[in-house]
Image (cartoon, rainbow, N blue to C red; front, top):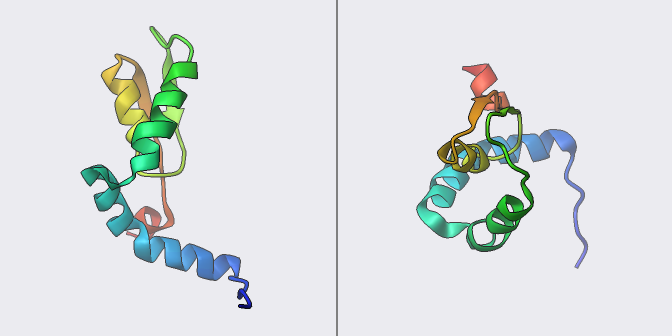
Length: 87
């Protein structure tokens, strides 16, 4: 089976078309790897953030930022996507 190469423009277009559904399903708990593997390991290596501030410019739907905010850290979220810029 030959794999077709997807252009960067198509990759962006496909991600933007899927982003809303991915966010909804992720927040409903369907991202099992993130919830049970990635997030716990990320939090276990995160140094103390007491009294710190952070800037979320990252990828995804803000789960890490929300968890860190719950741990009493001031975080400024600037997670811009192409979709948010186009509105």
